[in-house]
Each structure stands twice: as structure tokens, then as C-alpha cells.
Image 1: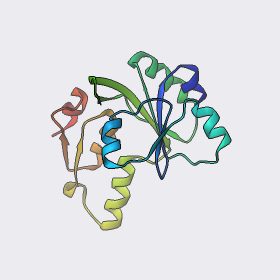
Image 2 (image 1 turned 30 degrees about the vertical axis):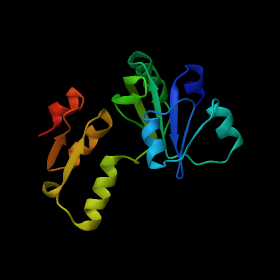
Image 3 (image 1 turned 90 degrees about the vertical axis):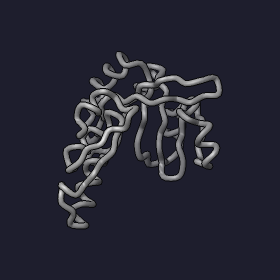
Length: 163
């Protein structure tokens, strides 16, 4: 959060009951429609320092160059996973905007590991697993699937790795 604040990144923090952000959330209008709880807190560092909250994951939004610098800086921190760069469409009343982001989460708390654990528990073979993705954060789960599907709006790198 210090890095986020220092570099003026937008950041969404997913906790168990809601999303806390330092700015307008991507697709906030959709979240309003479906009743997803969220709060806007201008100073996330202060908020998380003064409140005892276990975060689930962080989504850090910014320009590609600065996100790559941040990613390099954050790799020194142990026990976290950092996704590849992802892109999403931010739907606003004023139109569409493409945003670039990375996700941070606890080490091992990935889609790929979730699929592996569930498949092992249910005794499902890799050949029986289909995964669908569109962003850089979906690429690792392609390794544990028999069929890899990319959505039509996927990043090119995801389409290249899909079947």
C-alpha cells in the first residue's frame, strides 16, 4: 500500500465482505446493480493501518510502464503472488476505457492452484478440465487444463496459449 500511495496507483482491495478502493471502481455501475458492497477510502494505507482487516487480494491499476516497475519492486516481498499484466474494459457513463492492472495475493492463492486442489479432491483428470480466460492472470491455470479457451476479447497472449 505504501508503493500504491507513493506512485498514485488506483487500488481495489478484495476482502471477504466487500471491495475497498482508493478511487472509482472498474465497472462500479455494474457493482451497484448487482448489490456488491464496496467502500471508497482515499487513503488505503491509513485505513488498513487503523483497521484490523485481512485482505484477500489487491488489484493495482495504472499505466503499463509503471506497473512493470512496481511488479519488479514487489517481487522482493516473500509469500505473495503477482499476476502478469491484465487489461479490462472500464464501463463508465461517459464511455469505455481500457485499464491495465496486476493482481497481488497470498502465495499459492491462485486460480491454477484452486483448480489443482479441486481436481485432486474430486479425482478429475487434467484431460477432463476446461478453463476459460481472458487476462494475463488466467494464463497459469491453462497449465492444469485439458482444454484452454480464450474469450474473443482476450489479450493476444491468452489467445496464443489457448486451444
